[in-house]
Amino acid sequence: MAESIWSLVPPILAIVMVLLTRRVILSLGAGVVASAFFIESFDVIGSLISIWEAFKGVFVADGALNTWNVYILLFVLMLGIITAFMSMMGGTKAFADWAIKRVKTRAGAQIMTMLLGIILFIDDYFNSLTVGQVAKPVTDKNRISRAKLSYIVDSTAAPICVIAPISSWGAYIIGIIGTILTAHSVTDYTAFGAFLQIIPMNFYVWAALGMILVIAIKQADFGPMKLHEQRAIKTGQVLNPDSDEKVDTASELPVSERRKISDLVIPLAVLFIAVTAIMYMNGWGALEGDRTLINVFGEADVTVALLYGGLIALAVTFILFSRHIAKGSLKGNQFGLGIIAGARSMLPAFLILIFAWAIVDLIDQLGTGTYLAGVVEASSLSFSLLPLVIFIIAGFIAFATGTSWGSFGILLPIAGQIAAATDASLILPMMAAVLAGAVFGDHCSPISDTTILSSTGSSCPHIDHVTTQLPYALTAAGIAGLGYLVLGLSGNVFLGLVVVVAGLVVLFAVLKKPDDSDLIQEEPVAK
Image 1 (cartoon, one colour):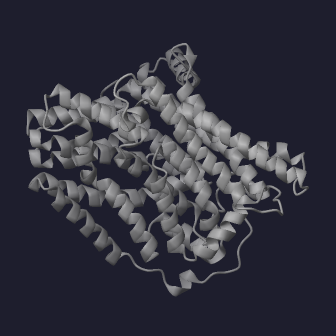
Image 2: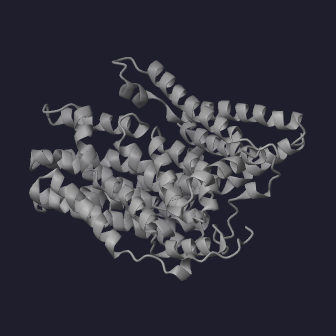
Image 3: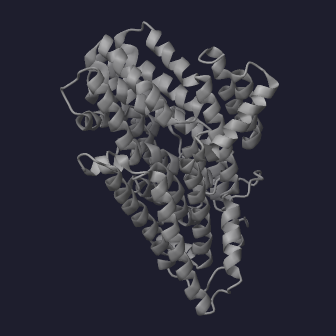
């Protein structure tokens, strides 16, 4: 059943179950079991062994600790603790009081969150977890739902990283492009030059970012998001009251009366600086060739930087907390309370990530992505339609497998091969379509780690984030798809961008502003 149409069944089962049952762990578990049974041809003993190996592989790989996964889990844990302590020290409240005087509108709060996502472009994991925590006090004050916050966070993290050459994503992509250009004897441009030329062709990035601005400025929403936003505006209740997922334990913690914005800014600044500096040092030490900035970041182990940067920021946070104890604004026995509450707030993300990584491993063994890529390679479509078709297939592969990076690794070489065998001028547009489609599919997938971390960083129930973001991602993909159709037919990147902009203008015109009755604010409801 591997590398056949049957390999699509387990990921589709998990995704459909998530959307129907709204129980993420149960759905991922069903996908894990189905994947194992398909791999082992329904042999029960073999399937149980495969399931065990998949979960074991989350923590142990090739007889050694799987540092990539374990370090990410530890960083998630540390960020939860840091967030709890910032709340207890009053830093979160002080920042909210400061920002609310300057960001006085719902549109301003959403655009501020978007700008934060653009600034923190080094890595999507860091971006997803950090931006939501920083922006949350401001968006809460402006009655913006957590579903909207997590959508903005998710729609700036991967899209910005995929076009930023000095990022973990940029370095990875440039490395693959270089291999493809060498394999097909393309000498018209370097790998870095090709990456730069691809940036304006990544229509999904521009459509996704443009949609954030359209939605924020027009203050108009659609789909499930509209219900979340109307509830937040009317009642101040930013979380879904029907969700039983505990995501906001910070509100239960004691808060110091000595509130200073520095108690939020210092830990996060230290975290950003430490992670960036350790990435640079780590990459510098691992690199033997030309030590350009891009090459250095490309060789860096991001998870090592997250782990040690998190430990440094955690130590600084504890020092700041001890000052509050010394001044009597907090008690020593509340130290343990902050650690427990912070760790507990991240437990849902822990479980979801572990199950998601297990199913991704099994789906990889099934060869789902390889099968879909083979379908594209074997097709005999018109050359002008290839960028659009590649965009759609890349989106489906990332959606089904939960990984944009895996989609890059599978489809970029195939896109280069198809272009070299048909029309060499299409090599850059087709690679751009792969990158765009993979990010789109990643945004839609409930088993994607960046989707999970975006909901975690924004303290939003994961299923609420998935169901509210899906119509927005599909809309942005529709606009981007039109751009790729025009690009394929005309061969002109500028015309493709014009179509994307025109699509956003039409969206702005079509979206209906909320009625005045929808904007009437009632007394806040206690969360």
